[in-house]
Length: 222
Ligand code: CDP
Image (cartoon, rainbow, N blue to C red; front, side, top):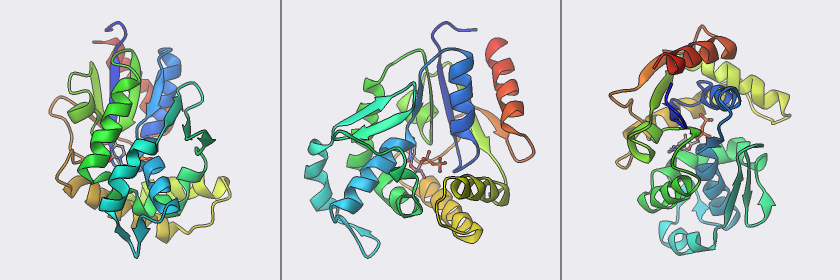
């Protein structure tokens, strides 16, 4: 196994990327970084400051305001702070999920997050997202790409949100996942695509422990 590896996990919404990335980081004692939290954080900021109106993003208004954003990410708890406030729970709300894909398709937003992510370290880490193995760390030592059936993903995410007390429905969650898959895959900048050298894992029929075991095996054998 490579020393101080970069482990990149990309894939579709709610395929278990963060769960497995966190478990891998504990297994190999590496920091875990949830890149999606940054896009969700900017989305929260945009909504709270009135830059999202009638499902449209006021890009001209948002761009100069990005300089006011001060993110602090704690990789041990994976808590994200924005301008001194812990936003880790707020960014999981369906309202954020609804707008995050349009915010994350904006080029200046991606430039901003790319710099934030690379500033968190350039080796010895596990990061999950959509463009980690293709854009953020194209030379990552290990690359995984997670896929799963939409219905399975929606059921998992719905259950997760229900347990957190978030008010939503299975149908709303499913619609949101389908919408984000489409927007994330179809955008011009850093679209969601499998890196040529990524190993694909279909998590539809596997639990988190089984996915973790196969990822650990792959990493330890190379
Ligand atoms: O956990 P889940 O799969 O729901 O998504 P997430 O990782 O929290 O990411 C939320 C959204 O952020 C995605 O739907 C993408 O629009 C965007 N994202 C991205 O564009 N690039 C990344 N590296 C990570 C997330």
